[in-house]
Length: 300
Image (cartoon, rainbow, N blue to C red):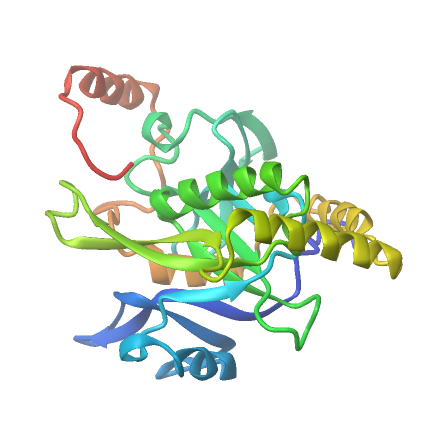
């Protein structure tokens, strides 16, 4: 295995709830109220639709795709959903810092260092909207490629928090049989004070509509036993996947970073330099302002 190269799940398609549009000569993200499945090929008109996109829309109301039947590639919740606070360079797409709220890996003038990670709101380095939560959910759709995954990328707290909770709950209830549990991605909407009462959409993970909890868990356990009988080792697959992800300091390359900056980095752009300030005086001032301000209701 090549050292320094993250071995991530094989991606054969993308899941999005928005698209890029051109306005006044600029490419800008436009939010949507439905899922779109695409290939990994992008043209001037946008990402090419995946054949499964049209197939899944055939039986939907209004031709809008708001739920997708999926299975998960791994039993470990943290392998299915990869989420970190991440700071991408806006020009190159290079990951400069990634952390979990306790520690981070950051490129500095001394090289790559392990440093404390106080989260974006309290971090002087990642302030001004430069650092955001970044999550990648890997799911399997259909049975054409039993190891290939579709990836849903998001910087939304609602989606990341909801998906993380669901994965852990289903992992516990199914007795560590996430990979054989029949699930579906569902698009949900809500409005908040911060969204000015306009609807915002996030992604949830639920049991399929035609199965209750008992049926789903029974199916998952029976399917898991059947795989073991055939010599399919889910435990070894999880182990190999974990080792591959840990093979590099960062799990994403510049091309993925550029996509994230383009699709999710349009809001809260700094007006001045792209380099985050590192003054502790600025951090102290913001902490004092944060403590004296009245907490606002809304997404967070």
